[in-house]
Length: 475
Image 1 (cartoon, helix red, strand yellow):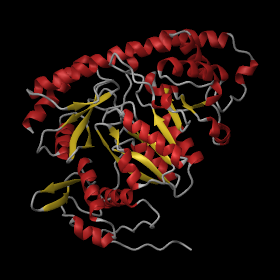
Image 2 (image 1 turned 30 degrees about the vertical axis):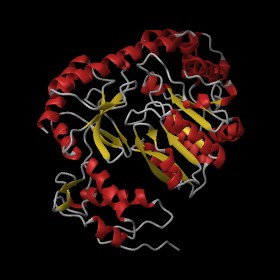
Image 3 (image 1 turned 120 degrees about the vertical axis):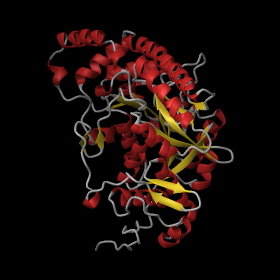
């Protein structure tokens, strides 16, 4: 028998009570707006009224309105209320979606133009040593015998796991054996395996807010409940997470260079997280997103390096450090769950390409990977500095920034009084793509934008940075 739902004034069913209310409120409103159930320009109920209608707290509704304003779906008018922003809804009947040519390829996947400023998290593939890769590929194929074409080990080739373990030891401070390594297709695949293998339906999972949107999609797919935890200048707020859901079974975070704010998780909070995981019997998934690229003299080891209790799964990816079509990532798995995760990896998919694993293992063994990382650190550091200089020149004043110590992007605080959603829309109309995000300050949330520079040319950075600065100045 189908589960019954109540119908709301906005024409949406209430989610079953076991669903995460915080995320459901946001999703329900987002769907109603994008499908055209609420007309552009119309006023949405007050937070008090909607909280009463839907049976949730007023704080949840307020947070949902704030998030949707950041996405450009809602806008507030002081003294008047909150409205659906004009242009947020497809004007055709039913809100049917238009598929932009060469942009949206299939449901759930968008092709982005990495040369469009300032899209974050894109790799500069123009610097990749393709000649070296071709020579290694020819050598691997010339030495191949029939065993090369058998089904690959789902855990990954022994040769590649050995090279990954050695690299993590000297570059990230992680002591591990090849048998602790699982080869995957990337970080998303690693997260999926962790959610499958380490949590049960209904379990609660700590996530960063703001954070990696793909993680929440996976969490919902596995019938788990995401618990979004605020991030401040010291990173993930562990004390807040413990107050919200001390019984959580997993924690997903980006401690080295938080995505998207760029802050680093403090040592005190790392220690407190490990104490919680050991006390609770929980696991922490360390997404080492762009953690290889550090612009400072002193390198902070990976979170996994201080994991004496073996409660951290360290997840990395060559898709970001080398090129996105490689589709090779890895996990360092605690020994208590190693057999379980190996079985799960085998049961849910075949292994990675033997050819590409062999090429990559030689690429690492011969020192090309470490050399490429050092070169790209210099490239990305220069692009980061150039972006800041161009924006400052256009703006004509000091800027509040976070996350310039490494990675692919930084967080730029917006001046007081500047509406993030309207500013992002103004930027879009001028050819700039910017993600809005909020940082939890000591007294209030600070709104800003994520400036990605990694895949842009110097000419694009100079032009687009100056334009962004002028737009900031004009408000």
